[in-house]
Each structure stands twice: as structure tokens, then as C-alpha cells.
Image (cartoon, rainbow, N blue to C red; front, side, top):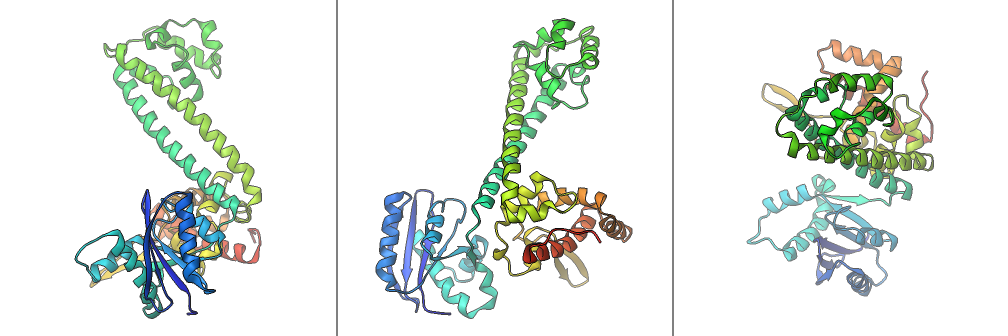
Length: 392
């Protein structure tokens, strides 16, 4: 390895502990910086003071979390940025325990990992190089993660609203096949009192967007009996509030999905993935955002591991099983599994392979992952060669 100045950063929410070492691993300076512009300027000033024309490698934990935006500034300066695997750092701390745990000791431990990385091949994954991600993929990642958070919130609020409806007026919930139907949510929110819904006239029902003659008749038949429990007086406002929140979330989710679709054509990864049958705009946007750049991966096996398409062997004695690796990106795995469920229905070759695995006794998810493992090889070649998906 060529000589370089080594910098270790123990990241905190408000302050970061920095250690600078020479190419030989000798500690040159330690200091703390606040998480602000003045702190960042001091960081780069001290690094440049010790640099003396040598390249700089910076290892930091918390990449993509509290490290922002310092990590972006480091990449803009042309420094090599390494992400410290927190799990492996904790295991390293267990193997070589110290009398205490402080930010100063963690910083020196990160600097020690630089030396270990040169001599022990098994430590290779402890410090992973961070490659600069194209701006459009970075935006897709932020948009898709925000969308997933809103979707999860919508599910929680919807479940709570349905539970309250079952306790107050189950007959009202029975008039719709799904409580998150827009017409049903608009019906619930058209009045501030739940009991007033039982007194709405036919003309008023037809003025609610999405409520046509078919649903108006369902509502009228419910109004004929419309029983409410005594809890309706104070639970009713909660139900209406939840319904309004779901409508807000649906509008925000739709806005994010529109922004993601507009960004997809500008992302090379998203365009390639979009040519695969079954991979929709939202799915490819999420995958492109989580993958970021193919330069992060050493090969197709590394990409498959990251996407959760290759469980690892877990064998001991007569026991033979598998386990999910820690390196899996859970968001990417969910997006990949969702896309595969559509893909096997649209591509005959993938469907045949899926059915073969099912006939061998594999579960639905195991068979999908088997298809996904082969598809990742195809995706890797598509990204490497700049080609779209082809069905031969």
C-alpha cells in the first residue's frame, strides 16, 4: 500500500473525535470538532497541515447518518473515504478489550484497523471504501426512503383506524372492501361528527369525490340501521383524524412517487433496471438509490449479497441450513422481492425456473430468491456492459 496520511473519526451527533496518524501508524494529533462549518474547516486545516503532499485516507463510522455532510466534504476534497463497519469494530473491540470505552479510544481503534487491514485478509470488510454516488441516485435514495417511511406510517394509522371502527361501528367498515379506499376516506372526513354520516342525504353523498351511485346505495343501506357504540362520542373524532392523516399521507406518497419517476430517466442504473419485465418505476428508483454505484461492489456475488439474494450456508455437524448475512440492505431486499414476484409472472423462463424450485420443496420466498440470484448475474452484466434486458 502506498504511503498515506491516515485519519480516524469517531462520529457523534454533536461532536466528532478525530485522530491523525502517519503512514507508519504513529499518532500525530488528536482533537475534537463540533458538527458545524467552523468544525469542518478546522478538520481540513489540521489534515492539510500534516499531509505534506501525501494522499489522505479517512475512516469514519456512521457514514450516511450523523456523518453527513462531513462525508460529502471529504469526498469533494479528493480524500479516500472508508466506512467503518460498526459490527466488526465491536467484535475487534471484544478480541482486544481495553480497560474503558471512550471516544478517544474508539478513534485510536479505528486507526489501528488501518494497520490490521494491510496484514489480515479477514479484516478487509471492516474498512469499506466509499465511492461517490451520482447525484441523481443520491436523490432517489432520499426520496425512496422517505416514501417507505410514509408508507409504513400509513399502514400503522390505517390499522389503528380499522381497529377503532370495529369497536365503534363494524357495519360501517363492512361497506368497503378496503378501508384505505379514497371514496371511503373522503366519506369519513366529510363531517366532523361520525354520527352525522348516518344522516347524510343521497344528494350530499353523490357530491363526495369517488362516491357514485354504486357506493351511495351501499351507504344508504348502512344508514338504515347505522348502530354506534357509546364510545362513538369520543372515539369518532379519533377515527376522523386518522382518516384525514391517511389522505395526507397518500397525497405525500403520490408526490414522492411522481418525483421519483421524473428522476428515473436521468439515472443509468434505474434505466437499465427499468428494462427488466416486472420492475416498475418505484421499484427501480428504490433499487438505484440503494445501489448508488456499481463501483461499490467487487463483483456480482457482492451485489447479490447486498440485495439479499444469496443466503449463506450455516452448517454444524449433521445440521445443514442457511442464514441471512448481516451485509444485506433490507430496503433493497424488499424492493427486489417485490419486483421478482411480478417478474416471474411476466417472463416464461423465470417462471419455469421458479416452478422447478417449488417442485424441489422450496418455499415461495426461497424460490424467488433463487430466481433473484440468477437475475443479479444478468443485472451485473447489464450495468457492466451498458445493455438493456433481453428475452431470448
